[in-house]
Length: 502
Image (cartoon, rainbow, N blue to C red):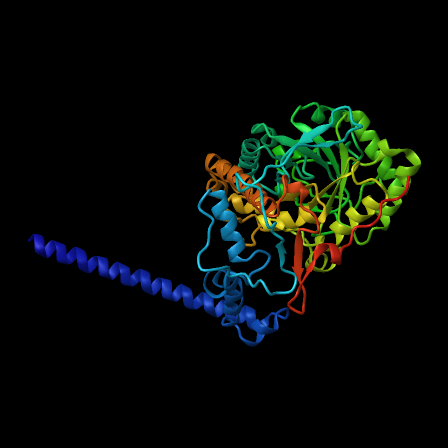
C-alpha cells in the first residue's frame, strides 16, 4: 500500500511539473510573439525592426561583454581606465599582502611614455625606504595646516558614495594619517566619524553652505569650519572629467538626509551651475579666497582643470598687485583623465589638459613668478600606484590626491555601474541591499593599508634615487621612454624656468 501511495504521489508530481512546464512554455511563446510584433512595428531601432526578438541578444552580449573582457579575454595590461595589473596591485596593497612579482615585469618598459626612475650609484645604508617630512600650508591663515602624508583621498561626495563607503574612508584615513576631501556634496556626519583630517570643498552649488538662492551662507560655513577636523577649504572651479559643466542630482536621490546635508528641497532635481555665481573672473576668485580664509581662519585654495595657463598667469599678476599674503594657499590641478560617477563622454575624453602637461606647466609658472614656496600644488588624475605618485612628485606636486585608487581599496571591481545606482560592491549606490556588502570594519583596514603601502613604496623609490625625503624627487630623477625607444629625462622634456627677479 505504501508503494502504491508513493507511486500515485510521484505521478501527481510529474503531472504538476508537466502542467507548469507547458504553462511556462505557452507564456514564453506569447511573450515572444508580442515582442516580435512590437519590434517589427516600432520605428526607433533598425536592428530590432529588421531582426525582431533575435536583435535583443545583441544588446545582451554588448552589456555582458564588459565583464567577459575583464575576466576572460583582456590581458593584464590592456583594459582602461585601469588594467588588471594596476587593479591587482591596489588590491594586494589594500590587503597588506606581499606585492612582489616573479620572472620579470609584464609591463612593456619600451613603450612610449613609460616613466622610470634613475637610481643612485651608492644609496644610503640602513632602511630601504625614506619617510616624508611635514609641510606647512597656509602660512598667512590664522590656523595654518601642517601635513606629512603626500598621498590623500580626493574629492568624493556623500550621495555619490554610499554612507558605508564614506565611513570606511573616514576611519581608514584617520588610521593612515591622511586627509579626506568631502567633495562638493557638503559635510556629512560620516566624514567626521573616523576622526580624520578634512578638506571641505565648496562646489558651484555651494551644497552645505548655501542660501536658498545658491549664494554662500557665511554662518553655515563658519559652523562647518568650527569642527577641528576641518583643516582646509577648497573652492571647486571644475573637475577633469567634466570641465565647464555642473552636475545634476536627480530628485530620486535627494533623500531627506542628503537634502538636509546639502541644503536643498527633498525629492527635487538639483542642478549645479557650471561655475560659481559670484566668481566670473580672477579678481572675484581672489576676493572669494580672501573672504573664506578671513571668515574661517583655514588655508584656502581652489581646484581646477586647465585648458591653458592664462588664468594662472592673471592670478599671479593679481597676487603681485595685492601682496604675497593674498595668494591661494594651494591649487589642486585635476587632469582631464580624472574620473567621476557620470559625465558626458565628449567632455570626459576631449576637453582639458592631461595631468602630464598641466602639472609641470603650473609648477613652472609658479617658479617663474617666485610663488612656488607660497602656493602648494596638489594634483589628482589617475594616480593609483606608487610609480604614478612618484612621477607626480618628480613633476613638482607637493601632494597627490586619488579617488579611484581608494575606491579600488574599498573593493571596487571596475564594473562601470557608478552612474546607475547598481554598484555591486555597495560603494556608489544608495540601495541598502547593495550597501550591505560593504563591511566598514574590514574596508577601514584596507583603506589604511593601501595609503600606507603607496607611501612606503614611493619612499623605496626615493631611497633608491639617493634621497632623504620622497618630496625631494624632481625631474632629474625620472626619465620617460620616447617614440624611438630611447628614454629622455623629464627635465629635458619640461625644463625648469628661471625664477623672476624680485
